[in-house]
Image 1 (cartoon, rainbow, N blue to C red):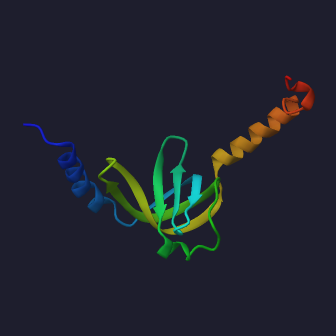
Image 2 (image 1 turned 60 degrees about the vertical axis):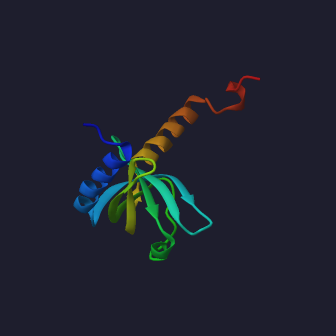
Image 3 (image 1 turned 135 degrees about the horizontal axis):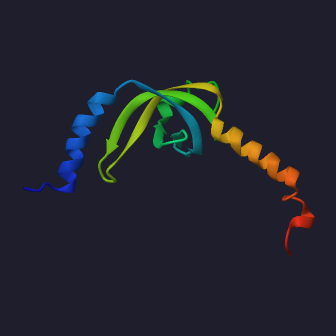
Length: 127
């Protein structure tokens, strides 16, 4: 017997969400977006995986500053399943800044190496 996609998603939601309440997750922020509604949306990632994160307007005022791409953070929140797309996300309610992310540091190191090779020089650019 088969089940519908909607039923499958509902079952996953019922089993997943109660198991992941009040979890803390550490990673690096990327694709940060501050919406006109006051909500924040971004991706939290490490070297192996990533997860979508939502911070709603009511909680974001607790932050000492606005997060930005490259921030290394620890988030507190709940995993939620969004049925219409069949994906899961972290609905965050707390944030602690813990430094600059490793991915951003590696990006800056690579940029310095490329500059030292002269790849950003005007003479190296093709017309």
